[in-house]
Each structure stands twice: as structure tokens, then as C-alpha cells.
Length: 316
Image (cartoon, rainbow, N blue to C red; front, top):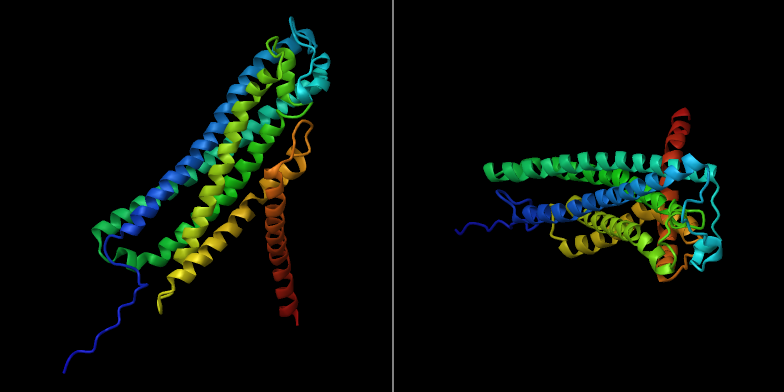
């Protein structure tokens, strides 16, 4: 009699070294490394601006006025939204101190983000090393590795991406607007006599913030897709297509949820600043904001109401 063929599970965790894990590690290293790089990019650009503000603020402390030698009167110059700017010494010093304190907060979250990235990187290295040394390492520890990936993903999103994006936007907002530090810097700089020069002052901070938001969106999307795909593995059957399409949808929703706090600041603070013209990006943010706000509302209600309902049930 011929032996009965044993049907191979096409969705089982492979033994030995898994090249898919290696590819995922490389993608993680590129995207998460780019995210950390953008975090430090915003910090160093903001720190460089802080040094400039510190040098210019010396005239306020010594002369108790914002009119330096050879300074420029913005109220008589066509410099866009800065043309109506007026600065009082006390308010300007308070704005400068607020910017410095916000930068310190941002640096604290950047250090936390670096620690999370280092620990996650160490988990990846240990996983790859043991999968090379032990053939059954992935099979025996699959659930632990998936749970560890999900924990690091949540930590990176809620302790790194949300604080860094919101505080980074706040740093940018302190520089924009008619009473922002950019207009104040322009009023102190005798070279700032044209809109083009004013735009060169704004360009570094705008570029750094744009890269940071782009990096957070890409890394959040990929982490959500890969985590959900690993978590949704079913041993009984191969449902690759369903898992893939569902992971894409779940990743999109999760990225919207993580970016909702940042979109809230952009929607209600940045696009309402004088000199800022809402365009296509503003329309996209309005639509994505509704999706994210809906899920945040459901999540908050679930967290608050479920324990109360459980207490009522136990009381009955």
C-alpha cells in the first residue's frame, strides 16, 4: 500500500533561517532609521535656529527694545504676513523662552525614541542570530516574537511618533504667523528686505518638518501592515490574499489614527495662521481627520465605558 500523502500546511511558520524575516528587518532598518534621522533633523535645525534667536535676543535684554541698530521696520514693507508684525520686548522674550522649553521637550521624546529603536533593533538581531543557530527557533518562539513586534510598534507610535509629530509642529508654529519668531528674526535682520529672503528663513524648518511627517506616515503604515499580517496568520488554511488586503486596509486606518493629533494641530492652528493658504493638502487632511477622530472617539469611549459596565454587571 502506498503511504497516504500528508497535506503540507502552506501557512505554517518555516523552520530554520527565514529570508522573509531578513527582508522585513532590512525594511525596518531603512524606514525606522529614516524616522529617527528625521527626528534628529528637526531637533538640530531647531537648535540652530535657537542659537540665532539667542544672538539676536541680546539686543532686547540690553536695550529693552526690539529695534536694533540697522533693524528693519516690517510695518512699512510688503513682506507678506509679516508686514503687520509688531513686537513688544516682554512678549518676545516670553515667546523665545517658550520656544526653548518646547525644544527641550522635543529632545526628551527624541531620546526616548532612540532607546525604543535600539531595543527593537536588538530584538531583530537576536531573532536573526538564533534563527541561524537553531532550526526550530522561529517555530518555538513565533508567538513571543510577534507579540514583541506589536509591543515595540505601539511604543514607537504612541511614545515616539505622536509626541514628536505634535511637538515638532508646535516648534514650527512658534516660528510662523505675524507674531512668530520668523517675523521677529526678520525685523532684527537688516538683510530681510524681501519676501524671497523671508522664505529662505522658513525653508529649513519647513523641509525638516515635512520630512518628519512623511517618515512617520511611511513607518507607521509599514509597521501596521506587517504586524497585522503576522498576527492574522491562520494555521488551518492559506488565506494570503485576504490577509494582504486586510492588512493594507488596517495599516491605512492605523496610520490615520496615529496622525490624528498632528492633523488636529495642522487643521485648527497651522491652516488658520495669517499668510497660510489652505490647498489640496488641507482638503486631504480634513477628510483623513474625520476618520482618525472617529476611531479615537470609539477607542476612548471603549476604554472609559467597558470598566464601568463590567462593574455594573458584577454588582448585579
